[in-house]
Each structure stands twice: as structure tokens, then as C-alpha cells.
Image (cartoon, rainbow, N blue to C red; front, side, top):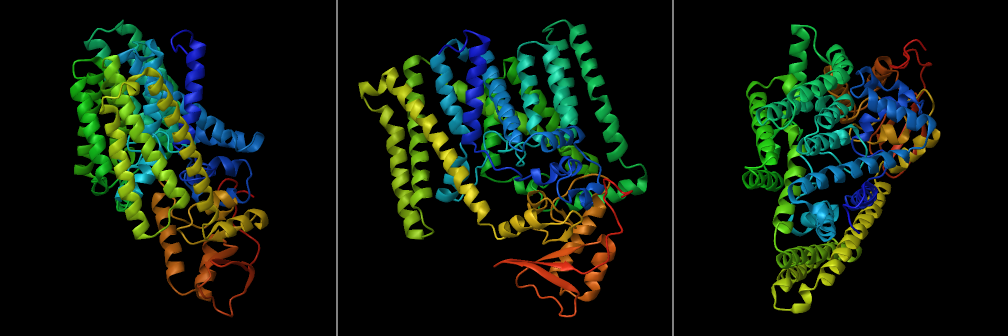
Length: 577
């Protein structure tokens, strides 16, 4: 297949690659991770369960357009549409990175190069290797090492969430290399209107683009300025929204927010630099540094260096001043652009910018190495047991095969250098990466079904009442959305003016489950939050004189309903009810 024949052929290529990437990554089930926070507003508006009563809704929706999308899907379509939308984001991610590589190395001019890069690309994004095998074999967590930021922030993450529109930031880089200011600034605007943090990143990236357009005289300056102005107009309503509902209005509010944000810094990898000192960050910094050096004389290298300098300065200012606004904006989030961009460029430079014979030798060596890693981890997944003797023997045999696979292409074996061998190995690696991704999806489903709280979630989903407000252990962060019930508090947080109140609610919930339950504590819970039920760990005792009725019990939790008066306080979404 020739990837430069028609736009339709490229569209098909990236559509297929996006699907393969989604599986290799792998795709997570619905209502996972951050979806348990960011889907709340849209699902509540769509009338799902008792979510409209959830106290977390007292915080203004930080992603109104994304919530509108969630509302539309839940109200008029089917939740599986979220997977379809996430696939489209994966396709755009592939289109942007492969397009950037093509601008630098002309990969579309040779279908062999494109296919080889696709195989290497999927290996780089294989969760089975970087998140699974390295953790088991070496005790090192390299999850998302080549595609995420340096603080566990990323564009993909295995499911649809607001941050996935970061693909538009990568698209802006592609349009910059194509000298298309319209595409550059509209891409930045698209990311900004969905995710407020990208408004900050996009503004600074837009200024850098504009300066480089002017300084290097790459195109008509007036054209770039016009489209920059258009993007500002597009983003202006979102900017006004953020300024109205998320910016403190007084010195007192500012001080309270400052304390609240600082409090969330401890134990939060997005905000605590001490948690960034690990092998993953070292590899990512190394990749970015090498890419800057190798491409220092080219436009892409200058762009990467400019972005790095600007955002490093802002990051330093953030931790020197501990300003709550800068902490919330997380200027180091620019790494969600720099890491995948530099990883892709470095891969293309090492494996594609060489003679044909050397290309086959290098890629064959790495692909065979990747194949052994995938096969080794698949063996562990199927036959592995939590026994140190088994793991030690498996580790030794796997490392021996890795050395053999890496060295084999270096041997004077003529048949190994035939193009057909490289093609066969590439197809095998792609198939192996997809199979490993599917296996990880199956294992993840099993882990999810085996969670202690899963039976309780299933019961609540089927039997919860429309007015339920349930006190649950704060660690059960996936219960709210998966069961469709409002909870008094959990460990999920949303930064905004209500952050201090949400932290107080978290403290109350932790104290409730840490201390002994008394009639007074339950009455206080009812009076403060109009709680209707308690989901208690099975070992948690309750007073015999407490007016409750047990309605559910399993090996881990029991659900008791409080015999209280009908709800007086109403929904944060509909306070007049």
C-alpha cells in the first residue's frame, strides 16, 4: 500500500492504526479513572440515578462543553459512543505524530518505512510491555513512558476524558511545520475550549508560534496575526467562564484557595516534584534532551527548545512562589506534547534515517526484541503464579531470549536481511501487540469484577433509590459513576472555589470511617448532608440502638438504610425541587 497516493488511503491507514493503538494501549472499560469525576456533570444532567444530588456538583463544572457531550451521549445515544469518540482521538494522535515525522523524514514516500514505523510505534505504546512486563520483571513502572507527560498527565490514558483533546496541541505542531497558521491557531482554540488548562498551554504555544513565524519570516505575518485573533475570539467565552467561576474575588478567598491547593500537593503526583524522581522521568528527560540536540538546526528542534525554556521558567516560578493559580495551571503539563513528539522524532531518526540495509538490521533487531518481550509477558499472564522461584526462573529465561533476539540480526545470516523477513516480523509484532492488548483488557475486566466493592456497585446500580445520598469509604472512587448514586464524599476532587469545602467533606468522611460510629455521628451526617444510607466495611460495627435497616451484605461490605425523614435539601443542580 502506498501511503502517499491519495488522502483517502492515508485516512484509512490512520483509522486502522488508531484502532490498533487503542487496543495495544490498551482500552479501559467505561467509567474508569478520571471518568469518575469528569463524567459527573453530564450524567447528572442526563438524569442518571441520583447523581443530580451529589455534593461534588456544588463546584462549578470545569469542563462545560465536555459535559454537554457526555449529556448528549447518555441522554440520546449509548455509552459505547464514548469508545468511538476515543478512537477518533487515537486516530488524530496517529495522524499528528506520523504527519510530523513525515515533514522531517518523508516517511509517506516509502510504504516500507511507514509500515516499520507503525510497528515500532505500537511497541512504544504497548501497555503489556511498559506497564506490565517491566513492573513484574524489574520492579520498574514505565506506564505510558513514551507518550505521557512527566507527571502522569497524558493525552491518551486508555479512555475518553477532557485531556484527550490534547491531540489538538499535537495537531498544532503539525500545522506549524506545514506553515498553516489557520490550522495552528484553530487547533489550539479547539483544545482550549474543552480543557481550561490547555487554554493556558495553548496561549503560550500560540505566542511561541507567532514569534517564530515573524522572526523566521516563514509566511505572511498578517495572516498569522489574523488567525491568532480569530482563535482568541473563539476561546473568549471559555475564558470569561473560567474568570467568573474559578478566580477568587477577594484577598480572603485567595488565601483560602492558596491553603487548599497547597494541601492537595502532598501525595499528588501532578503537583509534587518529589514524586517525579523516578526511572520514567529520567528516560523522558533524556529523550527530550537528545531530540533537542539532534534537531537543533531544524524548525522542529527550535520549536521544542523554545517551548521547553518557556515552560521550565514558569514551572520554576511556580515552585518558588507556590502560587495557587500556577499550581492549578501546571505549566509542566507541556510535557504531554514534548514527550510523545520527541519520542516519535527520535524513533524515526534512529531507525528510518539510514540506508536500506541498515534500516532492516536495526528495525529487525528491535522488532524481534519486542516480540520476545510480548511473548514472555503473555506466558507470565497465562501461566504465572505469585511464587518467587517461578518469577526468578521466568526472568532468567526471558532475559536470555531477549539477548538472543537482539543479537540474531547481527549474525552473518543472509536470509535475515531479506525484505520479506522484515515485513513478516513487522506483521507478527503488530499482531502480537494487539493480542497482548486484548489479553490485558480481559485481565483488567477480571480485576475489575474481583474488586471487593464490585458486588456492592452492582447492587446499588439495580436497587438504589432516586433520592439516595450514600456515605461510602472515601477510597471507593469508582462507585459514584458506576453505580449512578450520589455519595457524601470520596477521594475525587475538582479544583475550584469550592475546593476548601470539598476537602472538609473528605476529612469528615475519613473521620466517620476511622472513628467508632455513634448515634450522634449519624445524626450529624443526616443533618449536614441528608444522607440516606451507609455502605460500611463488613467489620465496621454499628450501635444496636441506631435506627437502621440492613438491605444488603456480602463478604466485604454491607448497606444499611437510615430511617430518617424525607429529604429536605435538594439537588445542587436543581435546588428548587
